[in-house]
Image (cartoon, rainbow, N blue to C red; front, side):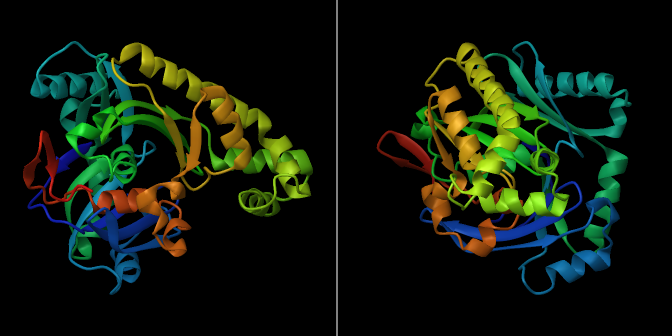
Length: 352
């Protein structure tokens, strides 16, 4: 979802993912179903505190061009799923704008927002941000000479990353669920082709897993963090693996319960194929114990994002950087699209 668009469109711009306490910057191209020259870097500092000097130092000579796309999290841009009557796109956006202004207690004229229909059941995903907050975030970015071409929600960037091989019209029957599990919060989406059909923001976080491990074992937060990270690659029957499993079981079961409810809600409110696969992504996402519980609860295959065909070829230094999937998704937010026809299928020239 793009909140607003500025200027021309081109492929391979700089993607900027703002997080709570950090920023991930990425850039890549896309051709013949693979990423081209992907690169990401991380700024471990609150984006609200960054200066133009901080941005210049992070960008240095590693990124090309001046145009960028910015992805905002739910903690900065308010996300809300609304139920609105069937109406034209312009009427829908205007109705959502007034609804968000009322819910947030903010004057309509002080909000920058966008809305998009998700699914076929009348749900609308509205995203709004106060213009004063947006100006504070953009000012140091403009100070480096960067030119934002679009601003979107992180859900849109994530959906794009997970849909780069599903952008043809005929791919709309390919339905997948996505659990984005971050260090600060999470979200659950159902994608049909490259369209978001269901969205729900979740409060679960990697931090809660770490705190649970620390409380369960009596170790420090730093040690608990290392245990959680190591459990992703260790034998689940190892001592650390068993400890992490026991300490995080309650949270994982709660996540699985909510995931199952999300999938059922999508199935009830949308006509069409059901989700056949659940993809886990996010900096705190992959854990064999969570995957097992999700598979049982949701009755479908659960895979790690790195198992996806187009992601497998990415270098480890990319996929090991928190927020890479958001930054690269934002980088590809404005692809040059030339509609062509192959048989009965209309698709983008850049589609896989």
